[in-house]
Image (cartoon, rainbow, N blue to C red):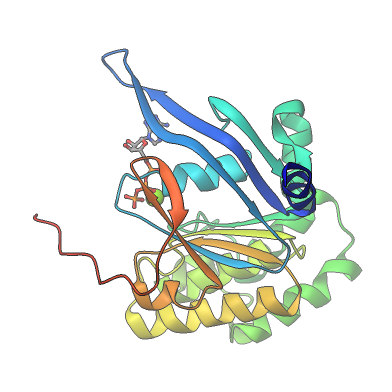
Length: 247
Ligand SMILES: Nc1ncnc2c1ncn2[C@@H]1O[C@H](COP(=O)(O)OP(=O)(O)OP(=O)(O)O)[C@@H](O)[C@H]1O
Ligand SMILES: [Mg+2]
């Protein structure tokens, strides 16, 4: 049983082993955000993470990307322990295997659509003949080919989100992490962006982990996990919709 668990974890694109995360509150006390989170996400799986505001969803994605480090336990990406790696090695692993889509895009407003999408390849030192066809392919898939030379700051929120998704997918990451990718789009656009991201990831065999507040969007995933009080557990799809929170 234990050896099977170890084998499953080794094959996982992303694995958390008893991960805990605490931040120091201004009072000096430790604020525990994640408690003993363990999971293994295999190749090709599409997983939605749901949970209330402040439940630690973004924290979990930041730990998965190696942008933040756990207080306890270990995170492994492509079977490699982030705890055992230098910051430089973590950055290289992220550059080569992980795509990130943030809620607020973090695009370069003064650069063109094309240059924003191509940026990870330029930073990695890839050759234009390697990445230019991929930039063109992705922009075509998201319907932005004719906007390639416009500055990103002229685009709508939905168009910027599509640019951010292209940038994240440019180097064919094994793991795509998306934090509320539809968070500030209207329903129809949000739906289209999600379907696009899911199909692009599925076509290329990547693993997708995304955070969403939308029950409809989480329904597109193969699995839904819920964070509550720092604990991650499978989310029963049949569960009744959550009661509205008092404001
Ligand atoms: N760098 C930090 N320093 C201190 N506290 C932090 C830090 N980052 C996150 N936290 C705290 O950790 C908790 C979880 O934050 P997190 O951003 O992961 O929540 P979330 O589930 O993504 O919420 P939302 O749905 O609102 O985006 C919050 O109480 C937050 O204040
Ligand atoms: Mg968040």
